[in-house]
Image (cartoon, rainbow, N blue to C red):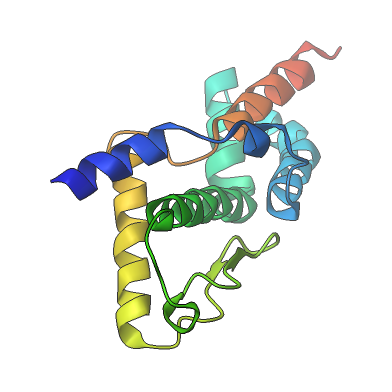
Length: 160
């Protein structure tokens, strides 16, 4: 139970540095897709909400999912590193050594985690990250992308 509470607390606090950093290519690609397809979404839809949903859910579904994966992987890696702080781990047993989030695909890459137990632990952490990251009713897509889609649709609809 204490582990679950610790995970919830870690996931609730996003580091300030992560919020201020330059967006990774996964996010930039999603933003570019939204910008390129906003006019098509407005043309194919009857209202602003429909256009934004069509833009996010269909026209740019792949890039938006990649950006969401990047966010989930980043949160998972941050959580794992914070959980490991203060724990004595021998260098040969530290499966987080060299762990990175691929900036383009959003995949969490564990260079040192060769053994199946470590991979299984990672999968469990990723599932917990998704669960504690907003629950089953939360929209998994990054808020910034949803906001951008809405603004772009409004801009296109306001054009003469």
